[in-house]
Image: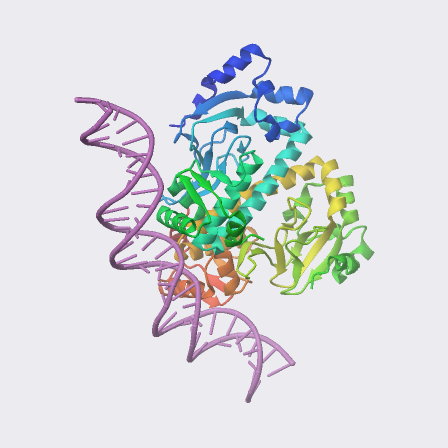
Length: 250
Length: 250
DNA sequence: CGGTTCATTGATTCGCGTCAATGCAGGTGG
DNA sequence: CCACCTGCATTGACGCGAATCAATGAACCG
């Protein structure tokens, strides 16, 4: 399903088209201003653009698999991806959802430590790890930016550990809704409307619950007038402040 | 309890003594080879040594507090520290235990995002954040090293999220014992003997359990012949491989 | 030696998981 | 265009694992 050697063989159409019109697919990139690559200027940016290729994944396709040799790094242009780890018996913990502008990669060792799977159709930039690492070493702005990203990942992970270790089901779901709303808002989505591209059991795997508990909790929130379920993937947070309290926000 | 302005006012005796005999307290540092500072050479190392001071904390003393302005960074010379986050009602999640050689700091923003408290008496190096940040910017080896550290912190956090979200009580405690044994071993401790300087409720706050459950699980492991409780802070992992299986290791 | 702190053990409760049925929407083919 | 199928979400009944509440035990210390 995810043969790494295939990555460089399938430049997606939209990128190939741009290649023909411009010097680099990056020149017209829609997410550049939200991505790590925005810190690069002039020649350094060109070097990055020189090693990038494009690829797309269908929903449910595996992007990278835990344990595989980490030869490629990705930047998401559109769509949503889940990052997760699994136990031998199949229990899985999603450690994060990524969306356009987010970077997938930076493993600590030679192998991927997480799996990544497309939730929706996804378009990505692909960087060969070797060349990318070389670029990091020679471009301090890039290293600094990735360092910054790693730092906030650590902070986010700690926050989520608090949720997984100590929050109740209601607090977890409320936290998730608030977090999603904030993310959506920073991407320019209408306030208090949250789009949930992932399935209930993916929300559950993110929150350390079962999909039944997630569903029941949403139903309860609706009964309490905290939310309106416009569709199963579209929630209106009608009482945002109240939800933040339930979430145990600081 | 943790007045930040006090940090620079209390150089501890052992450091002051060294200062008088050598150019820098770092010259005789026992943990340097296990610390981030080991990547620095010559003049760069001197610059680091020039901004460092020493301090000690008693058991249960707060080192840094979540939300405080992050003006100081620490490197642990001896002792054990817990890093944790809390909810308004007091529920706490310990995100990690640090020991000699470990670095405390690198917050993503201007404030500490975690609290740190000494579990045992602790001796630390103290760096003023401003000067330290300047040094990072001017010394690529240092930045690279800290980046590396941040990466492995992310990986460790993901691993722990899997534990908190998906493992049973037995799996959690087994994981903790194995993890502790590995850490102890890399510090040169006799194989399969684990020292647990933290209290049962601190283990519980790390594993997302209660101290009763931790205690019961240890008792069960003992009954199963997996461990021997030499003392409440000293466990012999008599069947290490079996424990690893219970932990759900990969 | 009494007091304090922490670990262990026991009895009971309860939140969430498990198992199972039903509902609902989207896609497909007749 | 409708009947059927399929995948997911919701709802319900029930059980279990860990939390809670409570008591006892063990180590440490002035």
